[in-house]
Length: 424
Image (cartoon, rainbow, N blue to C red; front, top):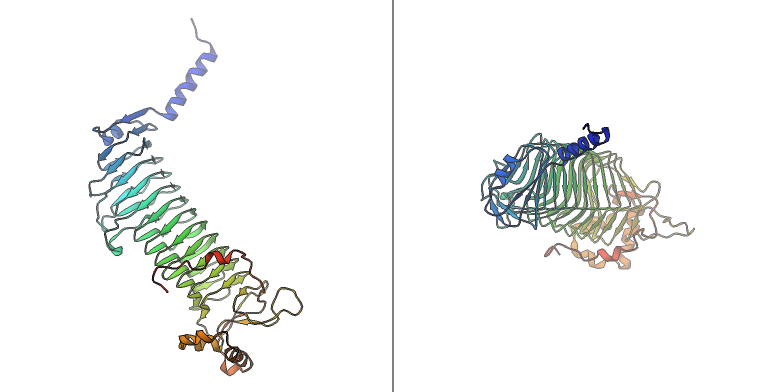
């Protein structure tokens, strides 16, 4: 009896569905995960039951490796624990640990090799690996909701990085928690990526980032590192809504950067809030720079930047500026300066007297730190006014002609006192 066209169509659909979703293979303790990978067809799912497995895996085909109740995969302290060369590989829900410790060999918990495009690594713990994830020439990868910790007993210089990106495009690095590595996220020659919602702490740099364009840094927490976000030799960046606090050197470094927008970040309790070096044609807008030793350290020809609507509050030195001529900030909308001594007679919210960051009093306080004890005294305020009246006593400065009388950030007090231990 001939089958109806409808039955044939349903059978074909079922076959296509099965091919698309693949079979499910199960690995239990005592069995080999690599053997299951070799048996699997493209599109299959390998479910690894809870247990302890000591193997170094090679995944060269498109499949999903899924942990059930968080099994542990140990690399036995040699090579990469997992090496991926195939496209469209998913690794989900595993504890991946104990890579080798060869910096020259770039040993990693998971190494996404050239061509491992569209790989997904999510919900994994990567611990006691030299590099957590090394991603090289693999495009459109997604690294999501992983916890990455390094070899904490190694000196910082002998550790690898939490996530290392090299020569990639389209990466999505989202919701990861990275600590106790050399640099939490190291990025080189990688473009059109998104770094969102990550927590980066107790490392050398929260991010060490170079030669990369058209990327977004958004809603990351970067704290208790030597340096927070270090963005160097880059252009066309969007850096917004990040929180960089309690870092022993800088909160956000902008070095040799152009055509970028840095807005609505909180930079608090660092040695230097912003460290800006050789930066041109950028916009810094709406940032809260609070309770740093130096609010902004600006030098090496950093000019032609738009700096508006930022709040500089309670920094010991609001701006340390090294330059040959005045640099205008706040040209259209102004910034708020907590040490501004001017007034607002017409009540328009803008000070009637311009703010100058590097005046005579600032320079004397740099040379004689004990002078800071007298900053509120009438004598020192008189000295500041005298310096404004006599240009020969004046040094090149950041000049804000429209200083705001009130800060934009109402919750700025919540960020007072978040310092690196022992830094003050």
